[in-house]
View (cartoon, rainbow, N blue to C red):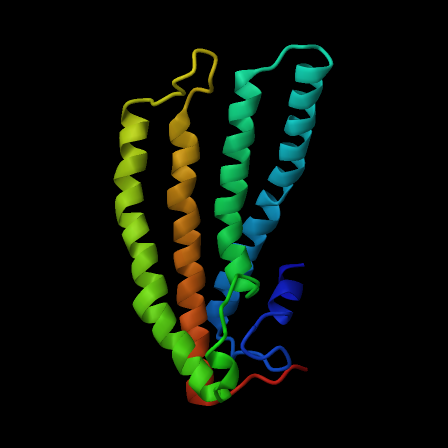
Length: 189
């Protein structure tokens, strides 16, 4: 199923594909498989929300644990979804200027955007999120609510995991752009 996602890739030009290399295909498939696994969190999140609503409005008994669980599931699903969304090129893109450019110029914009903006941002977030997670782990951080969830380090750990996946996706994308600049487009078969 992950290969189907890769086939719809390339927002630069929907008819032609950026050239894949063996390692970029492996990275993309890995990130997409992780995304497919974590997509089930959305189903669980909806079930938790429904359960919380029923408990609160039917039985007049809300639970702080369920409210916090909703936020944790949403956070994890959103963070892990960033990388798979980037792989299939369905992220938000503002193409006001690049719509008028030639395809090769768009590739150069993509290359420098990833190299100078995207990858440094990812590295910066990883640099600060690892100690953030470590502090939460070593202090066994828990919710400030009396009935809140324990192990807040678990959800903070997904900041590190998701941005590592996003780093892998960025490396794959910039490698594909370089390969396309060097060897030309990959024709869709």
